[in-house]
Length: 193
Image 1 (tube, rainbow, N blue to C red):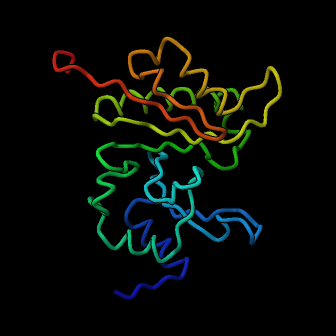
Image 2 (cartoon, one colour):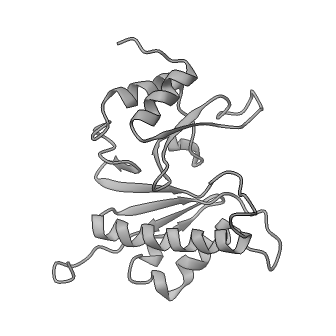
């Protein structure tokens, strides 16, 4: 099947499906992610389509994004039944990306943004457990902070160590990466549902 693979056409098709097409801002032509894209659900900030091989998002060509959007809005891909969820083998993964772009300092302070990251991460854990998702991958970025400062990375890692996350995660199965955190979700027993 032929696709119009101009960036503006794919961006319009993504918007019609309620998604956002993002282009990687990498400027180095030698980088794997140079001129690659990802599809994002702007309401939940879940990554709907990307090449997760390098653990960063992006990595898809415009053709792959157009093909993915062509499969429809509800079940766009048999491997991805809902926005932000991907089934690999028998395991389900949900992706949450905390790269929101530039912050307007007149609307929110930095502290408010960081507490919002904490609240969004906790909400993602609760909904993942309620939906029966096995893993949540939080893309928080590398640490750019100094001692005593906070970033999305420190907020996510702080949540995972806190007692608030205990009912939702299995700590010994969670994995910390440089720019991501893989949270293993505790399965609800039948009496708890």
